[in-house]
Image: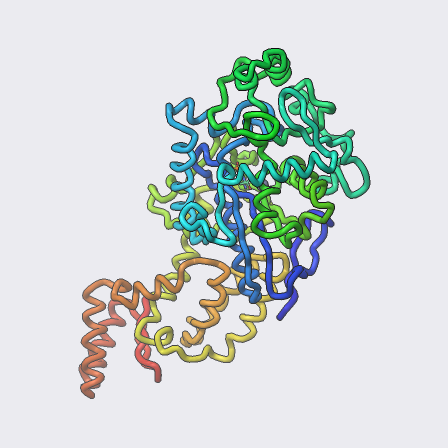
Length: 508
Ligand code: AMP
Ligand code: ZN
């Protein structure tokens, strides 16, 4: 097996990947917050997650992949301030948070399907799934248990507005700021300061938010008054989703879900954890603090982060800024969603990528080039199951090298395109095994296209009829008629080639 190299944000360098258990990878990827549709920037992140998983599988690793769904606790600012995003949408749309989450989860799954992104199995569909797509609201008990461990290790404390992580205690070498490489004193605390004035330090982030209204119901009016005033939530509506906890009724902060679910399904130390670059300074820093203070063990061995998809003006596409083209927009214009996937693969995951419809249209042409080739195979090379031409072997090696070199997908795509071009040039299409292996990483749906073509969808009906007739007359030994049909097909702009595995037809 060739070594697989990946950029580790922890070391700021490309490292050879070495899993904890040989042949196996524990991989946790931060998933969507489901209060709006996922925009194309988000989908770039999930295409990256999927490509990384596929690349590991291409390298014969068994990938235990878990992804979360945030359906509670993600405030309108990543730094605890503002209002819970799901609750805000629920209130605006007059629906329950659960309805909002279900609606956008369904949309997310559909878009992933259209982009050939394989998601873990939803734990709501199969509660026994070992490595699931899992919702925060189904793991409140796990979060509470983890917060208890953090408190037991004296890294968290309770005040009227909630339970907070004591970041000052997490100062020191290899602790706060390890991932972002920002010391505590360099970090901006503007947002966090606004959130709650009863915190010990403005750096502290919330683990469990206490609801002031509920404290009132418990006849602890003084505490409620302090809580309300300190959290600046008096003007905000009561949080609908609430749970009992040892500290009172409330709901979890955003970061604790990922620590809790990652540990539950994958263990206290995992191989890979991914997310977008925006997760580096806050979300992932906080996940490390929570997890390592509770377990005393390293949380993650390789942190990997994708760069942003930006608009033409260079600004990150973002839900909160209200700038978000959707996959639906492309589909409604008649663009194959996989053209967007190929467009994303055309850039390295660590480079920011500018979205434009023209660029996606250009990607659609490359996609069609691959699909056209796959359509040209039925009845011939693909179905014969024969070996590839020997000349294809160096292409395999180059593809493998590109993928294993920190997921160099633009290079890998270029190799795949060159392989197809070479097959046309040689008029030798014995590359199907290599191409399918490449598509195991690229995910451009080639096998499905070939299968559909095999079922008769590849050519216009009159061409299919001629091909069918030619097959019959050749079987009957009527080569004169077979040649007439060949001439007719060539006049219609088709190439006809008779090979030992059968006849192959393709558009010129
Ligand atoms: P969210 O649903 O906002 O929690 O984001 C889901 C994922 O999309 C996270 O991993 C983000 O880092 C990522 N993300 C958000 N915006 C972009 C963007 N414009 N380009 C790439 N990834 C993004
Ligand atoms: Zn996360």
